[in-house]
Image (cartoon, rainbow, N blue to C red; front, top):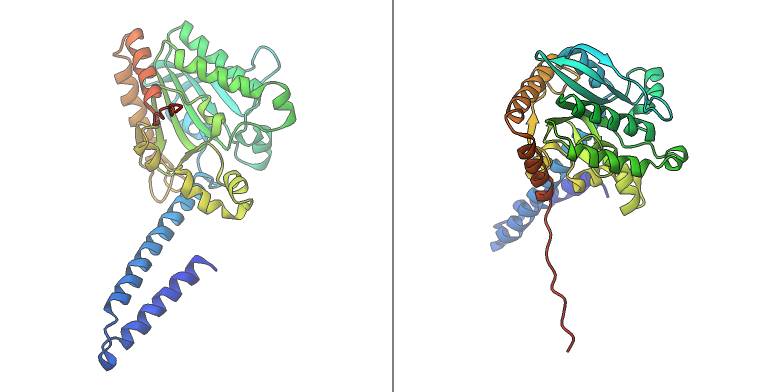
Length: 320
């Protein structure tokens, strides 16, 4: 039975009881109150579920601006750098030096592409091993010359193909995370669309992490989660709610530091307002981070990531 049909039946039951109430001395107020409370809870659950799934669809909107649009708008004199110095270049990762507010920065951005041909060339934003190796190279280059690092995250996840596994993509993701948390320069990451799994975290382990309000950040896609939990990808909307993948949830959980408002009903409708808001946030965070010495920066970063999440210590039961 669909959720809307269930809600409609509850409304009809309440109407019937209200019509019968006080007839022939009947007092059905308790039953009416119970059903009304149940209806309110179901409506709230349905609204939350829809809101979560709406955010997923907005993050994936075909007209949603990608990394290239933000780089063109925010950066000056962008000089792209290519290749991982081992296998080749990965079109899913844009990287290079740029001027940002008059300062040289290293930009590392995941690229979904736009038109069908561009998306195919960039593998729809799914990085291969060489893409993460390229990211590591750019991170170390930034550290050598003391340039801050800005990353833009927009990927459904790392490429899951056989070729990627053969080239140790899991190890490359782990190494990227390790490199990023150890950098002796300020780092700021922004989730601008989809932040999918380790593929996103690999360039997201920054001093500050921000999210556009209609972006998502999750350990797995809603479809993948639904396939595992219920063996039914059509339950992706339920999985989206359970995953707590929206910016609001990420902030509540201490995963991100700020939610960036989008213009209009989403960045695809008002790009300039969204980009200006992102610009303001990135500038503020960079300015603050550059006041710290290297040892302070590393200490704060390590504390940040060691503080995320919670655990419960279980005492070992003594043998009688």
